[in-house]
Image 1 (cartoon, rainbow, N blue to C red):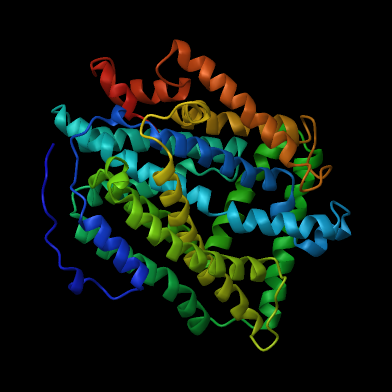
Image 2: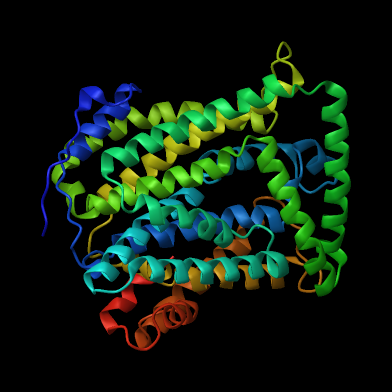
Length: 444
């Protein structure tokens, strides 16, 4: 094990909240453990397995159309009742939407460094192997997004992942400064957009009408279209997705990059192996962080769902408040989840955690399997459940899919070391000459 101190003064760190400084002090007390075996901890697999359930819940919102519709549109189309829809949607937006996607980003950054460091120790060209890995993921993600699922996240991880080739060589203090800079950028960009290109009520209405026309085409193809119709409209959905991201100041992409860097730091510090040593202090920090995260995220959800309206605020500024509060609230709540799971998930899980951990061990295969099963269940060329389920009812197929994945993952890993897509990824990245113990490092 390599042990080193971190050359940084806490007093010289950029000023932020007291909670951030407390967390920094805790991290600096930890000794990096960069040469530990990847297989020495299965806790990240458990966290990944839990995150996959959260992502499935969010993606089912899109398949069942609720992600596209305002509460008023839901009632007009008689998809749900207000007394059941509002509390359920508020709960999902508050506790599920955002944090679970960011947990996956954290884990991607965590495993990227583990793989990169492991390749270096094996005297391999770590940068070239990482590039091959990212190119494979990019091709897979673009294919997945254009043909099957416009909400694909794989291509985004691949694109942002190329930045990790630079950041993997940076020190922890340097990464911390980058994170502070990204957070400030995400907060300031929306303000800059409003100041530079202020939008009046007429422009906002025109934009909303244009978006409604696109949504009408998309929803019609999903409910009634053939396989070809759905595939054709996926490209339009991807364009709409990026357009929305640009109107929000790219805050969601900056948040993904931020979590990648936090995952990189956690990997450099060997955090899963050290967190139990400071369990009491991290628990106290968690108690301080949770109420702040809860309040900010609740405020953003109330605004996003239109449950709170500020008449005195210009209509063009409303998205600004949503963007900034969502970014901060999601970031803080993600840290709460990671700390909670990190403190309570064992390094070598047993019982139900072991079963869920095997879902995470096949994370890439299971993510793609979710797309296949949701397509069959929700699209018009399958069972056509889109538009025929209430929000609560849409969670029933989610539960069924996840239970199926828990069972199938545990059965598969009785006979094989990896999922099928992970195996393909491994072969393309390493070929035949890589030692068998390197297999465990190729994960998403």
